[in-house]
Amino acid sequence: MMGIPIIILFPILLILTSREQWYPQFFVVARFWAKVVLYGSGFVPKVKSEEKVDTHKSYMFIANHTSMADIMLMFYCVKNPFVFVGKKELAKIPLFGFFYKRTCILVDRNSQKSRKEVFDRAQARLRDGTSICIFPEGGVPDDESVILDGFKDGAFRLAIDHQIPILPLTFLDNKKRFSYTFFSGSPGKMRAFVHKEIPTKGLTQEQKKELNITARNVILEKLKSHRF
Image 1 (cartoon, rainbow, N blue to C red):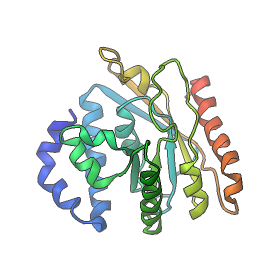
Image 2 (image 1 turned 90 degrees about the vertical axis):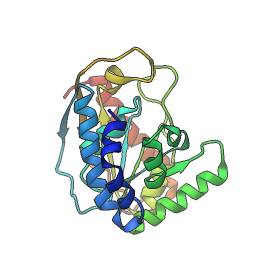
Image 3 (image 1 turned 120 degrees about the vertical axis):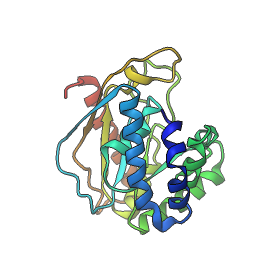
């Protein structure tokens, strides 16, 4: 389901990823691709928002990370053009990886130099008015009993630097529907909850840990309550 739409759309995707200024047009196609993958796989997204998201505003989008489907569901939920900051290992996936590395900011979690380059590239995209999306757990926990892993500080440092709000999303069913464990999961609803934005205006880097904890607690409480 990931590959067939990419093959069909390959010429369009190749053109739209050849220049950075065409990224907003690529993003529209990427959202269409995500819908095809989700519905074609038997997943039915259900999105609820606490407040209306300003589509002309830059945000730092964050969410819990438990499934490959998190990428598609984020595209489905968010209309603001954003760039993923993600692990470089996903670039090895056939077809998907080709466009992933052309459009996303890749990070090698074992390299300090890579993390610095990611920060610089993310700053450049934010200056262009593009939003950023980071899964702040930094990866999917090996232990699926973990409700929500600890958050890294990178997303919050960038948000404070550029004084853009954090917009947390909680994905309630992705682990159940399509985890990284083989032969697990099932078709059905994929609920996503879009929380109120967390402002960063006036905050300094000394407050990034506090911002980190606040944002994590928002997602954690929703995961624990499972209320929708």
